[in-house]
Each structure stands twice: as structure tokens, then as C-alpha cells.
Image (tube, rainbow, N blue to C red; front, side, top):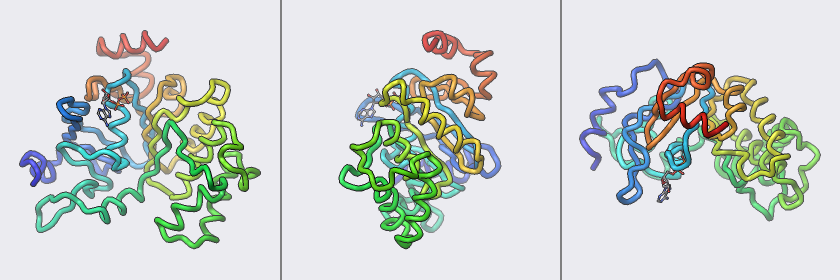
Length: 271
Ligand code: ADP
């Protein structure tokens, strides 16, 4: 049974906006006694690029893992296109969704992790075709065509038959990006995609993400420590601290006119 508060949210529309792609409504997440996300309201519009910045431990990763269905909210509702992600409406009541519903909803989301999470025993091409064939039911021929196109887009059209261990970290991360793109997600989540890379390999991965962002139609939520990159790519910067959004706005406002003390001191530390 869900908390009454959660039940009310669906009618009350805690977040007042027109057709958001993603909406977190009063979402909280605890691990044991530690509350990591606190009554969070957060929306993303279709095609919008949002960068999440904030101190280590402020809940950034948990925030996007909740959307990827890797963590379950303790309370609150997350919606994609108005449809609850973790819940299902049955006879006007919200009940916990089954795996089938989660699976369907997950199909709209792509994620790129810090660690590239490629299958080591599969070629680059095969890494990119497994999910579309097995999850979306795409024919192998169509999946291969699409995977080749995405791998070419990330500059790896000549590495189709290589294995992950034969690639640099930057190349492996670009495969992971192509693999997510093959699924045609409505929103792509990036969790510090360059933090596991040697410094000289960071640029090539950021360039690929920038290029995808410029294409426009897919929404992105990006957790990053790369402030210059966030400034370039994002339509909106969200600063989190203590499991809450402390301040958000266009990059120029956030970086040039930070209002809160917490954001000001965070930005100073990042310099
Ligand atoms: P950030 O991405 O901003 O560094 P995280 O979302 O990774 O923050 O973590 C926020 C807090 O939640 C940290 O204190 C972390 O130790 C804790 N945490 C994250 N995942 C778990 C987990 N699975 N079990 C227990 N604590 C966790």
C-alpha cells in the first residue's frame, strides 16, 4: 500500500508544468536511516538538456538511478510522459508496478554509466545489437544496420569486430553511448561519463555527447564535474545539495550569478 501522500500527488500535480517528459513529484529515497533524496520535485521537458552538478554524496547518481529503475523511490511518484514509472493506476488507485510495466517504461530511457559496462566477450557490434534484438524485438538485420549507423556517428565505424579489451577507455565509452542510442530513447542519462577516463581521453567522449546534444530532439540528464562542458551543452543547470535542488537556471545565471551561499562556495571549490 502506498503512502496517502503519494496517492494524492497524482491528482494534485505537484509539479505545475505543461506536458513534461520526466516529472519527479515529491520523490524521496532512503538507504536505511539515511535520506539521500528529499521530497524532490524535478521536471525535464522533451528535448531539454539538463546538467546536474553538486558536491559528492548530494544524491546526483541516486536521482538518475531512480529514473533508470535501478533504485526504487521510498515515496513519491516519477512519471514519464505523464505515466507513472514505478506505479500503475488500477481502478483510479496507484499500486506498485510489475516487472512488465517497468520493462516497458525502461525502454524509453538510455543510460551511460561511469564504468562502460560493455559485455567483454562480445564484439563492439554485438554489444550494440543485443538489447534491440532481445528487448525491443528488432530483427537482427535492422539492429545491425542501426548499430552500424550509431557506431559511425560516434566515430567507431571501423571497430565493429573488435572486442572491448582491444579499445581505449574513451572508445569503450563511445560504444556505450552508441549502444544506448540504438534503442532510440526519449531521454538519455549520463552519470559522470568521463570520470573513469584518463584525462587525454575525456575530450573525445565529451565531443560525442556534445554532438548528440546539438542534434536536439532527445532529452538529456547529465551528471558531471565538467563545469565548462555543462555550461556549453545544457539548457539548464541543476545544483543539488543534501538530496534537494538548491538552485537551478540557465548556465549563465548559475555560473555567473549564483544566488545561494552553498552554490557560491561549491563553484569556488570547483575552480
Ligand atoms: P552523488 O552522485 O551526488 O555523489 P550518490 O547519489 O551517489 O551521490 O549518493 C548519495 C548518498 O547515498 C551517499 O552518502 C551514498 O553513500 C549513499 N548511497 C548511495 N547508494 C547507496 C546504497 N545502495 N546503499 C547505501 N547508501 C547509498
